Image (cartoon, rainbow, N blue to C red; front, side, top):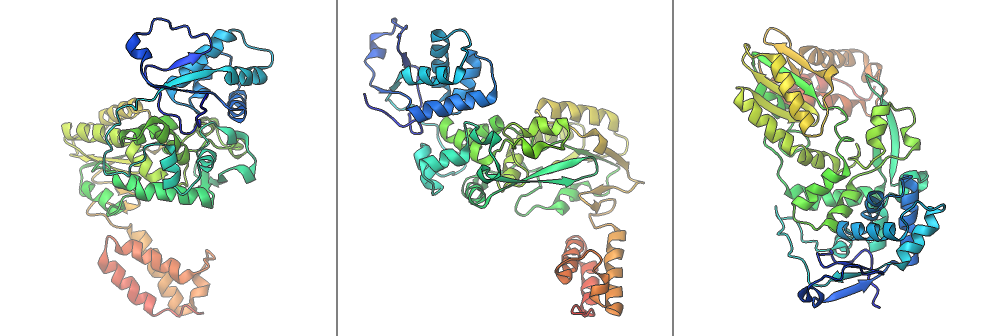
Length: 451
């Protein structure tokens, strides 16, 4: 019998059959005549699948087995293998691990060698017909690709040295948030995916976050001088976008299910149990399953692509009610005439967001009329987008005092490069007001930054 690699197995079609006990005796002669390849699991592969099932602590049911198997093989084959295991062992065994290993080792399958009709690639993405091509594209071996993609969830309980991410909890106004920074090797892999695959895909015109040529100013400008401004926030934005939604994005590009699963595995993460300590229950619920990690190079673009349906629906809704809509990451902005019923708009938007599988942080919903200060992404938009006057005055005061007493005396934040810090603030202010930038640069020229 010819053994085939579990990474490179062709996608199963309708003629897939599982042995032993070939129960389907009613196949047509045309089906039987199709060329087939036979295969079975090696001992290490069977043990890896059994370990993954044990870590999940699932009950001995067909759908649970199929769910775990789908992390290793095509969905169609996973369903067939799970059904065969349950037929052979209908009741949960006393020792599931050795039983499952033995069952997987005893199974044989036959796969149709006639290749399925390939889906056409879209958006000019590179051609990656199988996981071997993907591994070569990313300069990895197939085993390295399996290790980094972690489709079987082996690293869920891995210790720090084995984890692909470094975790850090940062304080915020309400509780703490988790930053998941990929380690150097995975970060380079994600940058390659971002640069050579994701960069090919367009985002919705209402999306202004993390996109070339778009920034907080372009996000805020459509809402200038509005009679009514509504600002809403998406709760747990990155962590609420799970692996199935990410995988669907890659499948929409035209990639096969196996390639899409590997790409999604490289772009998502199930946070380690130790990293979740100290976080609230809601965050832990999202973070302990594969999700977009906040800190990965691929997450901003994938987040924008995952929210494309939301952008399309909210843009259409805003147009219908005579309003303007833009989005910057998890910040949503709506503006229109003063007479619009803000409460009904907020309720309708919340329903659309819920239908898209996302969540609203109601504590951050703000409604501002024209006589109130309207702020979006840190910019005041009552007249035209610009940094608030008090922020400008603060930087001007720093420069004025630094010219009199020396720069070191004004570096109260302990910045390693205080001059670069101040020039960054000037650049931020100058993006929306060139006149203020010139005045601040003139003041900065009078400062002795060495003292």
